[in-house]
Image 1 (cartoon, rainbow, N blue to C red):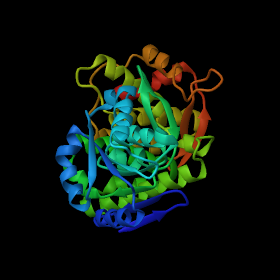
Image 2 (tube, rainbow, N blue to C red):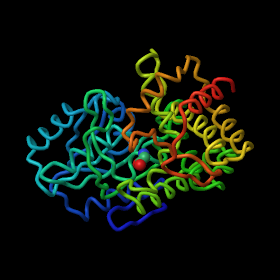
Image 3 (cartoon, rainbow, N blue to C red):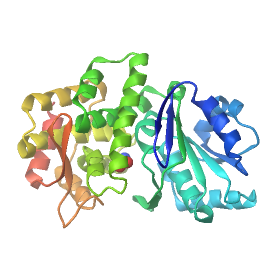
Image 4 (cartoon, rainbow, N blue to C red):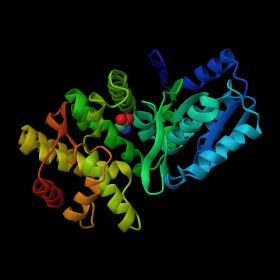
Length: 349
Ligand code: GLY
């Protein structure tokens, strides 16, 4: 088992982490233990976790981003109240980003804050959503419009849960693993290019997690360094929103971000001097692993979405770009024409 111990949270990674969880729960003597699941993790992941827990109350919501809302937050607060949860209760979030964002938000606000623990069950959750304390719910169409930043007490990452995922779901998380490499660590990108086998994949996951922890530790409130995590997300989020509106089978977050990273690497060549051969390597990495988007990517409409992005400041569309693989530059701007050209570049790959 590997561990990362910080002042306000601890991460345990490996195949014995659920034993560690059981040991910690016995020592902490929580007054009540709640486990938040969705209808998928209840079937596929709860049977793996339940042998390690006693006397827990399960709370279930429907799976999917559309359920990360105020109605479900209220439903969970009401259940906590119904079961007389006091300040010494704990919520264990068993699931992907929706579960950890929502369950964490509910825990951080119930009785002004009770402990919560994340057990991410998706690759995206393991390397990104469960770490860094961004919690919240969507408000109407606005993603993460209401929320707080508070770290879980513990994060237990057991790669066994990856066996419950489809190839598409694994790909979804792989985009963020690769993003961590592109913004911070060229050696990780080189290993990712070569590796597919499971043992090495676990090591690469841990490497990626360490990058995320390093960044959020230095800049928890996204004043500067944490913005590097937005690489690929300005164009990627716009594509994700567009696809959600227009496609019957919309792109997953990671698939949209992969396209965003190709386009933003293209812009990085013009604005930050990223070398052309590095752009080629980045493009090839994603083209080889992610399905090519078949629909049109209309520049003007996408740019309109980008103008509404909450990352923008002083009226400019805000980008994080690459100077080279492993080195990011925050708060960059560019002309609309270059954004349109980058979309064109992707579509002609
Ligand atoms: N997912 C980006 C961040 O945690 O800042």
